[in-house]
Length: 209
Image 1 (tube, rainbow, N blue to C red):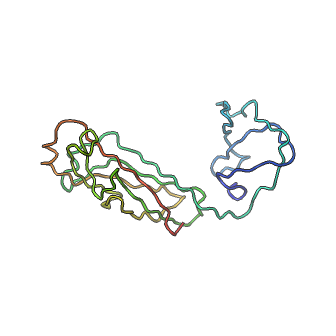
Image 2 (cartoon, rainbow, N blue to C red):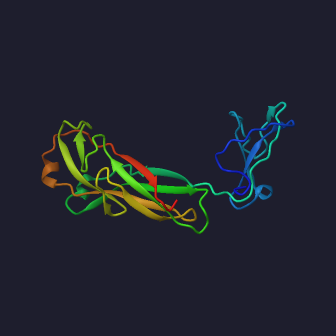
Image 3 (cartoon, helix red, strand yellow):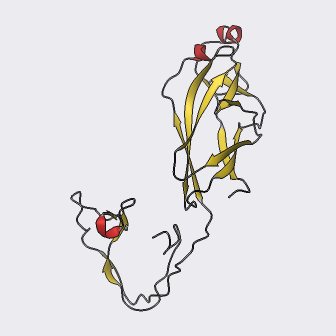
């Protein structure tokens, strides 16, 4: 289907009657006739046994126009997901030690088979600082514990892009996010409480896309 329609696009029917219909997606690599799963339309209830939803959706006087087909040269769709670690110990990030706090995964859709891609990844806090720190109760005016952020083992400078290249749609694109460089004396003198930092992660396609 990737050579018949463009993912995420809208198509308008302008002639003929479609009557009732349902939508199904082909299982990966199977082709529609060898394996498919029905998808909801307007909050339909999809039977768990794989049968078609009833009733199907209905349109009247919905004319059909040509649907683009052939070679599709549409840019890939990038999706970034962050899986946070449920718990971690700050002691494991003292000095040169490091501890994993999250994992970033980037998926590509509509990517050309066999081709690699690249993005720029930017980590920024609410004030655009180049350094990072945990703050008591998440308030920047209260006690702070500075830390070093690592992305795939590479030190992060706040608001400065990092390259993430050799991305592919055929393999998982995963990088660890870690914390290091915490001064133990600074941490030991911290008042009791909850320490937080909020970071926004942005991705920008490079020229390779």
